[in-house]
Structures are given as C-alpha cells and as structure tokens.
Length: 54
Image (cartoon, rainbow, N blue to C red; front, side, top):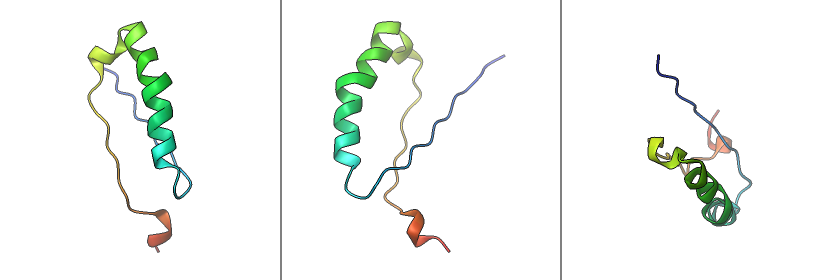
C-alpha cells in the first residue's frame, strides 16, 4: 500500500521568501540526509490569498 503525505502551510504576507530560504537551508538538507528526497513528488505554491476567498 502506498501512503502519501500532504502538508499545507499558511504564511503571513511578505514571508514567503524567508520561508523558502529556511527550507533551503534546513528542510531540504534534512530530507537528503534521511534519503527521503528521492521519494519527493513535488511542491505546489499559490499566490492566491485566503483573503480573496468569500
């Protein structure tokens, strides 16, 4: 049986660059260290704000 993990993060306006920098420095290297980077399917980003939704 295959199990998929999906995570959703909510960031404050203007904090995306900082989040990407932190992930690049700490998050992805941790995946690589554990060998999980080979199983990674992808990342999806959106610029749509929840404030734009009714």
